[in-house]
Amino acid sequence: MITMNIKFVGLLRLAWLAGIFPILIAFSGIKFMHHTLLVFAGRGKIIQSSSRFSKFTVPQKFFSHFYVVAMVWTSLLLLITWAYAHKLGSLVFESTSYSGITSFLIGGSHISSIENPLSTSPEHNHRVWRSVFLLLLMEIQVFRRLYESLCVFNYSSTARMHVFGYLTGLFFYTAAPLSLCCDCAPEVFTYATNLLAEFIVKGKNHMSPADIQWVEYVRPLLTLGWCQWVGAVIFFWGWLHQRRCHLILGNLREVKEQADDYQIPHGDWFELVSSPHYLAEMVIYAGLLVASGGSDLTVWLLFAFVVTNLSFAAAETHRWYHRKFDNYPSDRYAIIPFMY
Image (cartoon, rainbow, N blue to C red; front, top):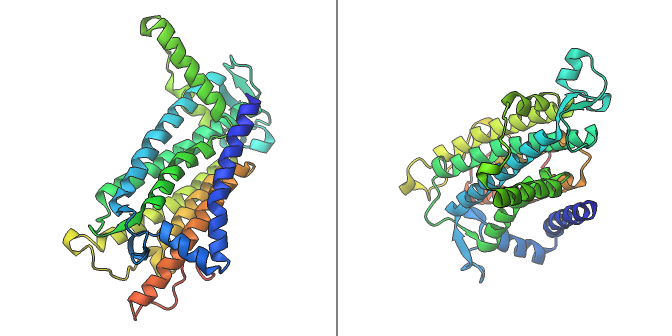
């Protein structure tokens, strides 16, 4: 199990590094790499339509596919991990290193676990329940993004994105939830496989009846550490601002027939940067990073990919706005207020 976990985590980290390095090289000023990345990662108004590779594109409205995949995949991971966490046992008290709300209220200073048939350490139980918490936040994010892609954005019929960018998006929303639970993913998959095998061999009527007590599925989440709740606050701060910015963008194109007409967006973080929805996305994943405890390199690499990828897209969007509008506000930055 340990060997499989090391290989699994190693592959995830290599995948994120493979996505980060080309963007960093493009940022370094190498024109060929910058142009190549813009061709293969371009979408919407920043796509390079003059490229010989421009025919390898799909409609930008296919963005909704990302969130359908993300909803199904994240929901599956969340349900299985949650069931596995409950099987391991419920955390009652937290140690000083994982000082949580319940611990503070009752004055507890140690970790104990109850109903722990798999005999794992309390620290391990904490990591599994933390993965449940992270996946729950991710589920909230992708659910809203799916709703927005279907009901808020009116994509132009001419808006395209490169097929490489499309495949990258599918990869991202498959790998991101896995990265949030990579500490326990192999054992969770083993647990799910064993359950499925038991169901196939014994049949539904011979399975052990499930005694579901909902409070036992929720209570351990309330005993997680301060970093999880601080991370959740950061997450929802970015989540709310991204929702507002997406509504602003969606309202600019309320009529689909006018979806090709671009306007300068105003309001919320648009007064500070050209791509506040990207900035909010970075804040969201910063919240997930904080909620993870910041000790997992895989989550750091996930966050680094989000920052580099969105910074590149924001810089190109910023240049496009300045080329498109003579009266574009000169005091707006690309993505990070007062810095970049």
